[in-house]
Amino acid sequence: MVVTVIGLGLIGGSFCKAIKEKTSHKCLGFDINENVLQSAISTGAIDGIAKDFSEADLTIVCLYPEAALSFMLENAEKFKKGSLVMDACGIKSEIVKKAHPVLSQRGIFFIGAHPMAGREFSGFEYSTGNLFENASFIITPTKDIPEEKIKLAKDFANALGFKRTVVSTPEEHDAIIAYTSQLAHVVSNAYIKSPTLSKEMGFSAGSFKDLTRVAKLNEDMWTSLFMLNREPLLFELDVIIENLKKYKDALEKEDSIRLKELLREGRILKELSLEREKKD
Amino acid sequence: MVVTVIGLGLIGGSFCKAIKEKTSHKCLGFDINENVLQSAISTGAIDGIAKDFSEADLTIVCLYPEAALSFMLENAEKFKKGSLVMDACGIKSEIVKKAHPVLSQRGIFFIGAHPMAGREFSGFEYSTGNLFENASFIITPTKDIPEEKIKLAKDFANALGFKRTVVSTPEEHDAIIAYTSQLAHVVSNAYIKSPTLSKEMGFSAGSFKDLTRVAKLNEDMWTSLFMLNREPLLFELDVIIENLKKYKDALEKEDSIRLKELLREGRILKELSLEREKKD
Image (cartoon, rainbow over all chains, first blue to last red):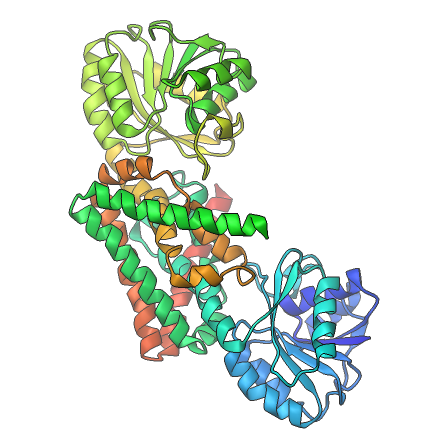
């Protein structure tokens, strides 16, 4: 089939490269940056430039949330009737709520999607054909999407090396992602802000690196994602702040029994989580 | 020379294995667990069992803080006169303050040390001869320690594969480690405690893994380390809680400009930190 990828950044570029490396689909690309398009052609990441978006059996829109929405709404007339359109945004409720009715009305099937992969770098130059290996591909199809289109999305993800496709609802997706991904970026970004940071060299090991890795984030994209998922993220922020205060309280009171109990609770939760992962 | 390692857990066992793999020193070991000792002998991690601790030119005490202190104070008479004794604890002020005067009085040179390496597993079975590769070896020698003994410690660390030896004061060490290591363990342990954890499977990627890796900690050891370094750790906890509240506040007020600015600040700090590392 023909797959068109809109937006050749880290995620879109990686889709193109994975398609070319792992499938026999024809891959067209589109980006507002002409240099990126030329680079995608010259490196063989795409077979050509998508002209009017009507060729594709599957279109994947890899833009930031607002841009993805605008693009889909503005080009709703141009997609091939009966074709499948997916986005790749990190939040789903807002996207599905706004894109689905418009595309559906035009006879186009829309499935909200979120490839659970990324790097602490942006742009086509960092994209790789193996970015999705062992990652989850989350899709949030509405009830009217035929099984055949869901199967197409799953088979496509499978061919690209995703470990699995998880079917969820937009609301469930957004609530869980607020914890597993958004909170991680906020905490990491807050962690780096201690005045002690300037003396860290030579005094740090793996734990500091891990906690601060995603502090290097794209603030435009993440501000947009956070603002579109305020309630779930605020819930998670409250939970971690309240939990941190418990350790602080135990330390202030020099209550080592309580402190050990708090640490033990966390250790056990992490161990159970690792066991679930192993069984998976 | 003869090196005796006291306590053959993750760190002590890794010292033994690194000594045997990378140097020609004779390595003796001691542990209260007879099975561990036998395992260390049968795997060739030590040349033999340390009987009365008087053979060693260098003794490394790899026990938890309280146990390390008790061991050094109780056996102060037994170490060889003029020999070097080091601990490997994650806090230094308390250890140096209490161990140094007693050992010094007996003609033994004590240097507080902290190998900046670890794993989220404990025990001899997880120890490896390459644990210290690329890690920092921090030492906090008091002013009376002769240059020759400091050089011995540095050469020893160098031979074992440490990237560098950092000379610090106990107080500076403890203040920085509260940020780079202790806070990381508290935050990670708090992060895992969201009720959303139970739904995380299939919805997480690298950032969740990184943020929660060290949640799996040894609560006995870390409670002890935290209680012995309360003030610096409380300072860091306050800093991160206050910073997290700023993101929360911006989200609550739907202030996307402020939110983006907060994320930008963190991103730049992380980038500067990565640049310092690269130049290193």
